[in-house]
Image (cartoon, rainbow, N blue to C red; front, side, top):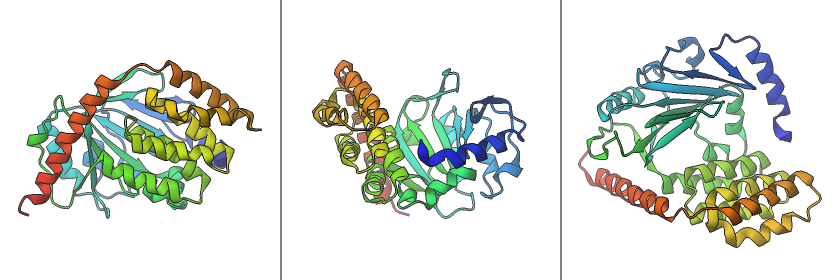
Length: 295
């Protein structure tokens, strides 16, 4: 991807100086809950009790884009939320989304989890300086909670100062940034960000599909790569993908052809979509009740 060559070389230089548990390509990962060192997180005062929570099962780092995954009870999550609210940052956003959460190690081992902390540091912070980049990516650490299973929505304790989000609300923000950005990195990688939020959403799919008409072939390539995640629902966009096959860019042609095959062979996910929608409805009702509750 042509916009990240300088990032790649900088990351190689960083990785050669780091003592890490495991290294894979241009990233690092830690399985388990071995405490991580505070010196790496001085930018976010008060974050260490969240990062080093004993419920952590996995973490990974790529270009300073860092994810921490946790698996625990609602009571343990409430303790983590209390610590999260004390981090010295402007925004304390918590995204509530349907369970399950499933992380993958660099070797594709599956690791179940039910909440996640995400931060942008180091090189990846550059994304936030791009036009509308801070609408697509989170400026401050964000906690995502996967509601269901061990996490009982009714028993969540939300500390003062925390802003609750659901997927439709965050999707609108990301889609607006994607559509309005003058930066092709935001428009391109934003397709994947929006798709990962909700690959059942018709609105999200339309926002990604619009990028097939972008003036930059690399952005179109990213849109083509994201559309198969919507499965059979993306079939109406097959004509637009076929138009990409006559583009002069070989990478775009190959990605579009692969997308066409994936969409045509996609399995029916209507059952999963109904379960997802039912869970989202419960989350929306929870948020509405929180708004009406006395402060």
